[in-house]
Amino acid sequence: MSLIAVQGLSVAYGANTVLRGVDLKVEPGEIVTIVGPNGSGKTSLLRAIIGAAEPAQGEIALKPGLRIGYVPQRLHIDRTLPITVERFMRLTGRVSRATCRAALEAAGVPDLLRRQMSQLSGGQFQRVLLAGALINRPEVLLLDEATQGLDQPGSAAFYRQIEAVRRDTGCAVVMISHELHVVMSASDRVICLNGHVCCEGTPAVVASAPEYRALFGTGTGGALALYRHDHDHGHDHDHPQSHEAAG
Image (cartoon, rainbow, N blue to C red; front, side, top):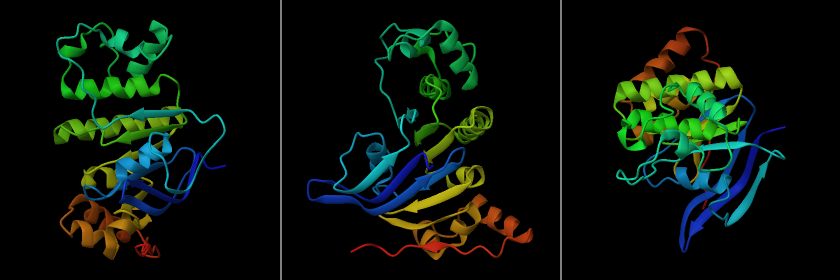
């Protein structure tokens, strides 16, 4: 059974329809990356999945009892607020210190338990948010541009950590990202969104799709290099799944 099955989803804010006719399935253990230009509805899709945005049309079916971990795009904390990492992680409910420490270890920052939140670097802060999302041992992890504001090495390290989490826990990962060169290599499947699903498939397939190139050009470096690499290994039987714009 799919963990998440989205069918014919449309999301509107007033008269502004930001998503139209979106279909999406997330299977156990896979990494799915959603890419698209600003304003393409990526965050609205995740918000609809977690129940924070009301669908105008369509259905979202979650596996019964599905445990979801969510890492938001950004979280503002008053830098003058004296709160430790442990205290921050326990705000969501009764969680033991051992559970907090295990989640921090899974996020790659085992030594931050007693650190003040105000003293964390950007990368450490995002790892703490990731640890918070891992506390309930999610079956699927949703990441909304979780590396925004990090430099390229910091982003790459964060994505390596996500791959380690998937390997160690078996959870599925759905991530929104603007860093095409990084995520294209980390993903099992890429969905290109621009108000609707433009194209989807393996990274190599999407990198070669005309719809993808129309949005991002051919200068996405790593993605297209990956495409050539895959073709060198005989994957040229793949064809992109194209989706015409609805309406």
